Length: 74
Picture 1 (cartoon, rainbow, N blue to C red):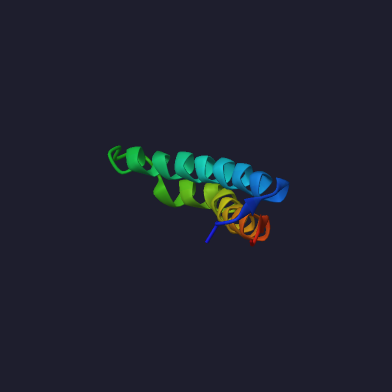
Picture 2: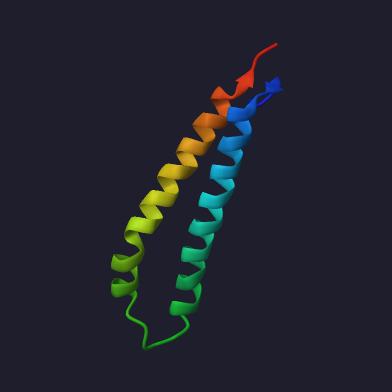
């Protein structure tokens, strides 16, 4: 899928993909600990983090598209 000469757009997309993945993983990691604590309000946590989850998912898709567009086919 990413075979060929990689241009600057590919590398920028890779950075965006990596940062968005880190943010998404950090948000989802909080839920792993929330399920072990009986006093955490999961619905409140989800309402607060929903925009970040959607934003990270969108940036992951944008990063993948930039990576695909940044490869020059031989």
